[in-house]
Length: 593
Ligand SMILES: *[C@@H]1O[C@H](CO)[C@@H](O)[C@H](O)[C@H]1NC(C)=O
Ligand SMILES: *[C@@H]1O[C@H](CO)[C@@H](O)[C@H](O)[C@H]1NC(C)=O
Ligand SMILES: *[C@@H]1O[C@H](CO)[C@@H](O)[C@H](O)[C@H]1NC(C)=O
Ligand SMILES: *[C@@H]1O[C@H](CO)[C@@H](O)[C@H](O)[C@H]1NC(C)=O
Image 1 (cartoon, rainbow, N blue to C red):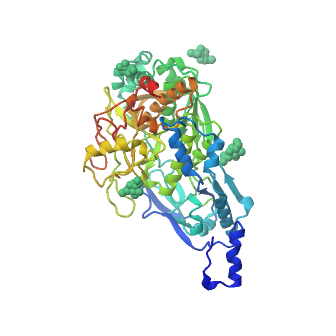
Image 2: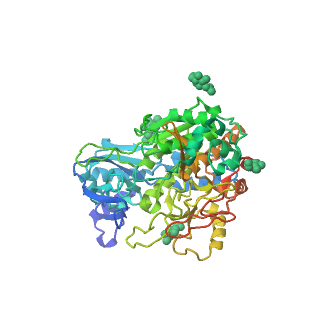
Image 3: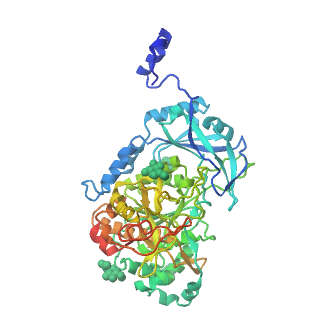
């Protein structure tokens, strides 16, 4: 509300000063006073300037409105996920969560007034409730540039040749800063293909062997075999799930979030079952296509097949959903046709949060370097993961495959300093980040992503575990990592030698991409166990695993995660930024959840 200085206290001014006291909307808003919302010092690495964006190109701008009672949602999440709290396990319904994250009417009014000021008629404004309030408007590049005080360009990704329309900075009227969290697409460049796919093919030495001993292999159920080859049988033995029979399959589901045009293949899954999980033959999973995501059965994806084969391999006969979320088709700079704007996390999150029923366990094997994700964008996405937790879902992310960081690890703020490079969304305190191990007995795998967020403060649930580790670390790496940041991974699992079937052939694959579906499988079985016993799903597990359930993990005390031209962190007794609390022991965890 405007204030009135006594010096200009004339009757005309008096009127305009008093009106806001009685009307709910100020008479005039000051749209000209703009403030920079986010900017980059340099074009994000891997991208190059291509050309100015054509002024007439149209696209959808999404304004993420401030979620009015987000603090209450987080406070509630911390209570309902704290095993010592009376509200433990009392998850929110869709309506209850939406009541907390809905924007305040003042925010809606302010944004609408601003859009009208820019000539956008109310009937062209779309309001979306999925994941709080989003306002979506289709505008031309010229219009977006006027509204956001910026210049849009076409950038191309040097490795994939993918093109996107993005900007190096954007601004908003000061009046809107307290109402709008983020505007997309603006400065988040990372797109489907450039998001790191945390998996890679390993030398195929063992695959030939596997093809020869197909039938014998499903009997390799003793954990010692996990030292050479990973199959569902050896993981089930190693993590003690072999004897558990899912009993709540009418209400418990596991979900896999897939991106990058990766399609899980149904025929390959049957081949995989025949070789590695014979009792599951003829069972399958459901594909849900989000935002026009594909399901081309002629193009089996390695990542998608890995995720589906190991989640089903660990949890059969539990229902399984593969979410295929589309990005944009390659952008053609001379096209005036609207394309979607390639914001994969947001597309999937707004879709899933709009569902009444959400899988109780969800795994995602994709990530970015945190510094390539604008902080306002990362915060918004992280808040949406908090919302998933509050709805009762356990959300896993791979911790990354480059130890403490890939390559030269230079900052992108113009100073070119060398620092460890945390990964996002693993660095979001509302997800459970999964690192990697190898061998029997298990040691840390040398690429296991781990470190400390530069955006997110350390959550209280891990304060004591992390400070013990930092105490033993002393001054080593001081300045290279953020001593007050959220630390990850939280837990870990095997990350090399996974046997998968792609295009009918057995292939060996690794990465924390493999660890996340494995751990998700174990926790999906724990969710089944709780539901079968009349309890609620586990939901957000971090407060639980760092406290009463910490003894349900096999502590990994050997190995390290080199990167950024350093030796990286070392695994130690207790939590460490290489393997977290360790690998799960289902039988022990059953007693603790
Ligand atoms: C949310 O779901 C409702 C009901 O299925 C649907 O009408 C609406 O379009 C959905 N909204 C979004 C943003 O997906
Ligand atoms: C779990 O598996 C390990 C290794 O197979 C085994 O030694 C142990 O007895 C099993 N049970 C428990 C409760 O740890
Ligand atoms: C799988 O389905 C096929 C075709 O319906 C059938 O012939 C086969 O016996 C089934 N196999 C199992 C193990 O159920
Ligand atoms: C460390 O994390 C905090 C959040 O806890 C953040 O405010 C700060 O900027 C970070 N410092 C560095 C050097 O990244």
